[in-house]
Amino acid sequence: MAVRVLRAYGRAATPWLNGGGVTREVAGFPAGAGLTEFAWRVSLADVAQGGPFSRFEGVDRVITVVEGAGMALTVDGAEHRIARPYQPFAFSGEAETGCRLLDGPVVDFNVMTRRGRASAEVEMADRRRAVRVPQSAVVLLVCLAGTAELGSAGVRLGRYDAVLLEPGEDLLRVDGVTAVVTIRQIA
Image (cartoon, rainbow, N blue to C red; front, top):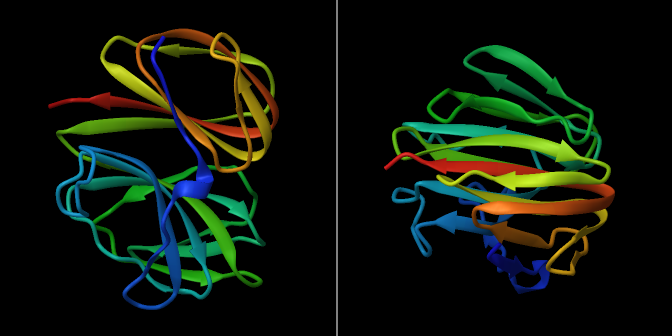
């Protein structure tokens, strides 16, 4: 199984245009693609204040609170409280979306896929489990709390470290919480 390690310490913080926080890209495809060209993009964001979300036409989004008291997202007029950590919430990127922080800043985990080019499934692992990467996919593991270790490669992940896996199977040992993101390329 091919493994590419993506350490947290090498990620640059990109400030948001509205000044409400910063984003650190974990991985994306194609590499170096901007916000209008990506097929898929995974990032972590430090959210310092509430406000409107940027619209992403034709993009499916999954957001997960990792740290902090949570947020209330208003998506096309309906409020959704995301107060428990590690509970993925999916919504449309073109929806009119606003955020209200429940009690101070949060860190959130974001997965975005462009419809017709890629799709993603986001799961949280909190114990030892097999990781299977289908032939037409990649799997991104991101350690969100504690540590994780990928068996055959002997790769140990600290908080916010990640590995990108190509087709095959391996054993993941988790002491905390690790996001398992299966991304299928469509085109």
